[in-house]
Amino acid sequence: MKSKKVLIIGGGLAGLTAAIHLAKSGIAVTVIEKHSYPRHKVCGEYISNEVLPYFDWLGLDLTGIKAKTITDLRFSTVAGHVITTTLPLGGFGISRFALDEYLYQEALSNGCQIIIDQVENVDFENVDFDKDIFTISTQSNQTFTADLVLGAFGKRSNIDLKLKRAFMDRKSKWLAVKAHYQANITNNMVSLHNFDGGYCGVSKVENDVVNVCYIVNYDAFKKYKNITDFQEFVMTKNPHLKDLFTNSNLLFEKPLTISQISFDKKQAVEEHIIMIGDTAGLIHPLCGNGMAMAIHSAKIASELIIKYNNNTIESRAALEKEYQKKWKYTFNKRIQAGRFLSLILENKTSANLVLKMVTTFKFILPYIIKQTHGKPLTVES
Ligand SMILES: Cc1cc2nc3c(=O)[nH]c(=O)nc-3n(C[C@H](O)[C@H](O)[C@H](O)COP(=O)(O)OP(=O)(O)OC[C@H]3O[C@@H](n4cnc5c(N)ncnc54)[C@H](O)[C@@H]3O)c2cc1C
Image (cartoon, rainbow, N blue to C red; front, side):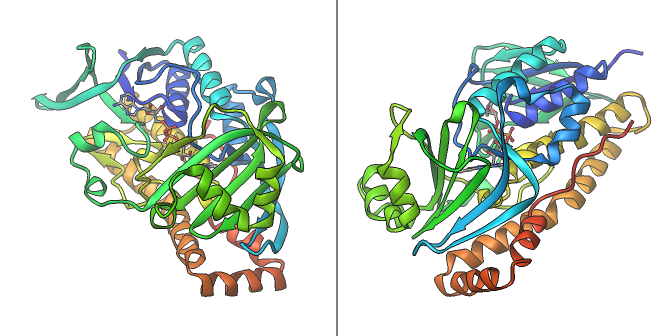
């Protein structure tokens, strides 16, 4: 039986994971990614261990790229009060520069075709009863056809505009900054430091490099001229951030930034494109679970596509319905918990109340973490 042709738009975590999964199952996969590898991305670079059983099943082994084990979480308030807890599942630190490059190489060695180009248009055409096809065109005027398209184009893309997705009409107040530093911080620990207007995640990645990534409300940021001033006059009011910025060396020429980060609701399927990763929905970075969710959604989509390919799922409509149902069931609660948490922590009074409760009742912080994370990913045989 001829396998369905799958085309994936975007070769980040979700796109490359799905590509590897589908290729391992004998499905022909093409990934179109607009940037070449390797490349730094704005991300906290802490991944929950929930992905590890699935990575094992995919034959992925991160020891070669020296992922750093992370066992503990430290949270500090603007005034510098600290709460530390053991992470229920734990995780690891790895730069996106190393991780995406590793997955890219694994996708290639599993036989995926990867094209560096920007997708400009996706058209779905009903050629005949029960016969339909996608036509995908790129910036460099290449045209592809596919039976199925996975949308793995991340938080915000030209394709979102083309699809007139609702969240693109609403302005988002969040922007984020990330850079690597040489600094002396505790091993095995991810720290989340609060400052006026946002949060800063700090943890080690491979080779003892320290990743510093923060998300900030634009209203808080815009009063300052630039990143240096904002860090100096706002962030360093938190003594832990002051210590970090005073005693570290920036390893990038300048920090990377992104803006318009939207946590609005998105559809898991649009114009018959099956959305995976941030394209389907983004949890607040405060929760440190976006990457695990991107990988998990790639797994859900791949498993269903394999069933569609071998006719266990009989129609495109059934495939789309099942994917939407599973996405909602798996991620809705987590995303809502993340939204609720960020709302509480944005307000100084409620944030202080929560922080008092968390320091008094030690079980609360692990409970909150569990609400924003999933269980280890088991794989259907
Ligand atoms: C500030 C911040 C901190 C975060 N920290 C963490 C953390 O510590 N832990 C965690 O688990 N999660 C974290 N996240 C979330 C995490 O980064 C994302 O959930 C994750 O990157 C999603 O992967 P993805 O594959 O969906 O998207 P991406 O990795 O963004 O991949 C999308 C890809 O699509 C490509 N693309 C876009 N448009 C096109 C096009 N038209 N044609 C071709 N290619 C295209 C892009 O170039 C990109 O490579 C954080 C997010 C933010 C904003």
